[in-house]
Image 1 (cartoon, rainbow, N blue to C red):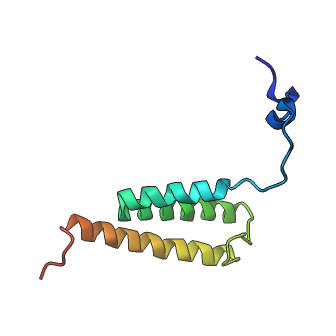
Image 2 (image 1 turned 90 degrees about the horizontal axis):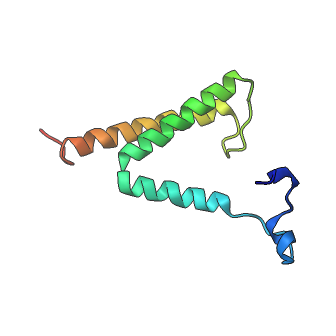
Length: 103
C-alpha cells in the first residue's frame, strides 16, 4: 500500500483533464441532514441543534468570536441553535403525546 501523500490525484493519473469546479460536498451534506430530519422528525431537529450549539459553545470558549454563518457573531448563532433545539424538544413532546394537544 502506498502513502497517499505520495500518490498523484486520481484525475492526473488517469490522464483526464483537471476541473476547477467546486466540489458540491456541502449540498450532499445538506441533503443527508434533510433526509434524516424528514425521517426522524423533531428528534433530529433537537439532536442537530444541540450538537451545533455544543460545538459553537466549545469553539467560542476556544476563542472563535465570528462565524461564517450568516448571523456572524457566535453568540447569535448559539442563541439561534438553542431556540431551534427548544422547538425540536417541543415538537418531540408533541409527537410523543400522540400528535395532539390534550385538554
